[in-house]
Image 1 (spheres, helix red, strand yellow):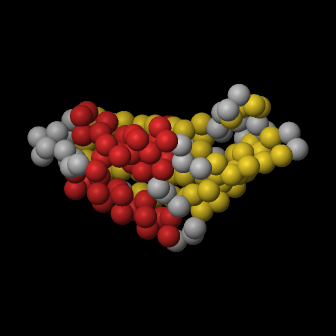
Image 2 (cartoon, rainbow, N blue to C red):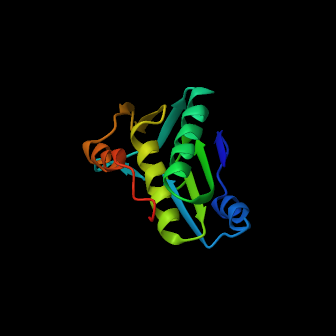
Length: 155
């Protein structure tokens, strides 16, 4: 299980390749969140992300442990960018590995829903001559709410 917060570019293929080599890996699910060139229909020049050092890593590790307790995953990796991120650059990489696809998909979705709504990151949109901080959206909160019930052990 790996958590890394960085200001450097994320090499999604290299990150996934590390996990694919785990013994008994039968399914590798990856997600890369990419900075869009617009926000709410308006063009943006970049996102700026901040985090609470130490706390962010510990919280993400806690949620990976929760995913591991819910599904039989063999590994998980989360790499999250901070600092200035331009359109087209990867913001976050999430990968989960399991012997079977259902667990890998569910764990990856669980982790992304957490990162989108509750992880200690703050995101500011930079546009033409302005900027504003972004709050979690209702649709993201609704997606995260589905994880309040633990799945059946067979899943």
